[in-house]
Amino acid sequence: MLLSFDLFSSSLSNSFHSGEHDYTAHAAAFVTARFPLRSALTIGPSNATLKTFADLQGGRGRCDIVVADGGHSTADARSDIVDLRALAKMDGTTPRHTLIVDNLEMPTVRVAWDEAIRDGVILPMEVVEYEYLDPTENGGRGVEIIGFARYAATVESRSTYVLNTY
Image 1: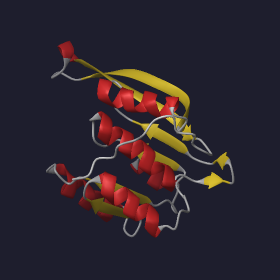
Image 2: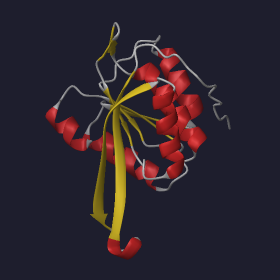
Image 3: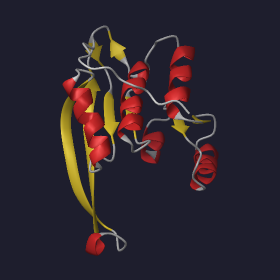
Image 4: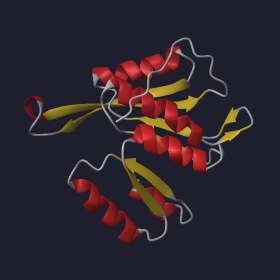
């Protein structure tokens, strides 16, 4: 992500984080120092903060890249996928964005991904699986699965989403 800031001097980042981890403040301070006036961090549960941010944008999705790498429960992942849609750039009915969903190797996140496809919320483009070295996992190797998609221009929901509130 930092590389994209270096390549595109006009890029901006809006991040949403629960703030429950110690690294959040350090990571935010690093990004802010490295890219002043080009990043914003909103602390709080994303199922509330994303909706508020989207409402403040007046329904104008402006994001070229939307990344869902948040809560790992099915409900949290589904909420993030659905709520981030309001921030994705569309040109009429033509998607002008890419949605990236991390942690599809987790069954709970994969269920949210599959349900979003089933319900017509997202149009999958590709799923990428890769192995990485990690001495703390499975004999020194870990697996990461990332999905790439676009949001559908219209959503014909075939199920009811229940969004978490804290």
